[in-house]
Length: 186
Length: 197
Image 1 (cartoon, helix red, strand yellow):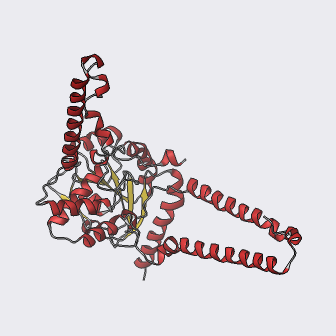
Image 2 (cartoon, chains in turn green, purple):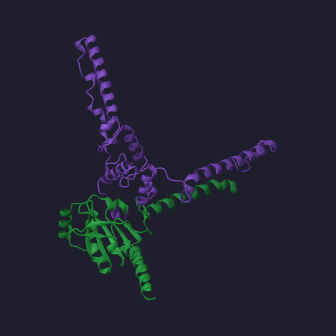
Image 3 (tube, rainbow over the protein chains, first blue to last red):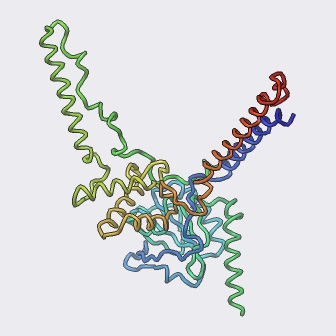
């Protein structure tokens, strides 16, 4: 009897395994490459400001407070979709938002921002994409959460949605501000 | 949901010219001889023209094979053939992050061009293949390597197939042993007792 049921059991086991595979694939973005930078210092960068090209902004300048580094480009349609979310949901969080204009012409970026509005506290330009490579950027938009010590805490590949802001970004920011609050009151 | 939220790629995934095999180029060959000279133009003449046609085909094919490097996606100033071979070999082992089933050598994605340039520059500054791979892994994870490294996180990947084979051998051995026992000590009629699947 047991021997007769064994094939059925194996078959059901396989069905379960494949079903799990389908479930997993529909709930995960399979093309996402997890960043090896999480928990490590953000790569050093010193890049010209979009609106004041003679001046630069570096990672060191930004130490002291957590910030979001949003990689975008005027050529990137998804960035356009993400833009109202940056303006409407990220900006009200009060965290510093730095735009990294990636592989783009400064003139195009200025026109793009002029058209849609500027949610950024500062915009830096990475025209040849070298800093993007250092950050392991391979798509746009991508967003890094970097803490006060310059450690990368979280990376979002693709656009923010209300859902992943609530489920992923907010807890991560709460972690950071909680930590810095504790530090501030010794 | 995924397709809607999926980040858009910087450029559409298109194979570079280098990815195109020899067949793709066959369209440059002259038209078929069968449509060429009419049969009425004499056997000897058409035989000669067919022969010269095939000679022409051979010349074109040989030229294409020899000049295959002229089809490289973005001509980089290699100092010699050995360096170029090393570059090609290395970029074949690296994955394009944008078109994730293409290697860096074949991909025409914009980021792949940048990364090829980066690999080339690092070669120029005397970095070894290992150093270049480490540089990319530090930024893009082991995923950039087509050959996953052997480490605790990939043990399952590397050894699961062998484990499955071992399990299979064990199961087969058990079945065979059971059958041998049956055949030895029990009458043939008893084989219908249950495990005849």
